Image (cartoon, rainbow, N blue to C red):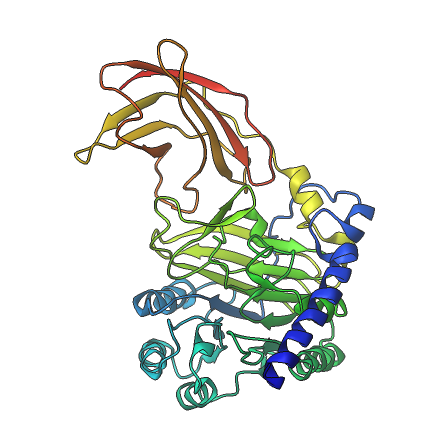
Amino acid sequence: MDRGLMIEIKNWAIGIVFGVFSVLFVVLPGQGLQLLRGTIGALPQTPETFVPTVRLVAFTDSHNQNDHVADAIDAAYALFDDAEPYAGVDAFFGLGDFSSVGGEGDYQRYAETLHAHVREETVLINIHGNHEFKNDNYREYFIRHFGHDPDTVTEINGFSCIAFSGERGATEWTYTAGSLNWLDNAISAAEKKADGKAIFVFQHPHPFGTVYGSSVWCDPQLNPVFNRHPGIVDFSGHSHFPMNDPRSIWQGSYTAVGCGAMATFELEDHGIPGQHPAGYDPAAEMCIIEADDDGSVRIRGYDLLSDTYFCDWYIDDVNDAGTYAYTYRNMKAQDAAPVFPAEAQASAEQGEDGAWVLTFTDAQAAQGFVVHDYKIKIKDESGKKVFSDSVINDYYVIDGDPCAHIRLDADTLEAGKTYTLSVRAESAYHKYSETLELTFTA
């Protein structure tokens, strides 16, 4: 076996061991130290007195969808050029996977889009994702087109912003002892001069066991480093899991945020990743980060396809873990069972391709939360079950549609027959509605 590959496997295995060890005490949602903390209570609202002293915008996983990148930059300027009491965008951060296979043409087209839309006075930082590491010349291309190292620290209005790419491995990426040492030292240096300000870290994969999607699309080697530095705020992508899922923010000893995607969404159903339900393509979400000099941070998600905000998370003091409201335990406590409206209805219509589309009124989630999926059963007039499944809700599509639409095979229903639909709505934190029964004629 190649010695470099052996070293990579060894480093990765060591990271797994230490990552899992730290998970037991700090990282895994609902476990470890979080079990020792009581729930904080209602999620905080951004006070009217909050005035940022820095504003950053991050986006990730555009995969050659450079039109979405252009839209994100233009939209950010339009939102904040005249904002009061703090105007402007101080920096853009691209969190990797702007490419498909890492060819220089991908770098060139992405860089041309950035330079055509990002103003000269705005800081612009990128990092590598796993797709960029598919090409042997990844570092050469990166420096040529972006003009800075893949691992870099940038001071923006007194805030330390750490961009971390790691190194290429035999497969896509790896975090060697040397690269993790760089990250650890960069955070330590930032802590010495933070003076109460937040420290921001930007990298591609999620730390394991933190935000939605991090059970699979992650790197556990990050965990031991981040756990040594309470108070940092980490932003990542890679999973394509939607940012408007409330689990895309997580707090333990630090804060982690999943920034969604700019190309396509992916979700999980009952812990199984790789689910691509209807409407998952396209996607275009960006993350807006604001902070003041006293440790307060505001994080908002913005959907470029509908031009709307879809989340607003506020942290009063990133340095005081005792006040963290976005722990798994507290978020689950604040979530509530979804509720179907009294006037809920159902129908089914057959399209030209023969497939049926079952439509029923959406259940309502608690404010700031979502209905993640529906447990559906359909019985015919004799009581025979003709369909049963768990179906992901399209909460990641922001279109104002008050109904759920489920596609069924052509032979599931028969035109003219009457059926009974039984459906339960499940929230992101596994709270269930009452079972709703509706009768419809196909």
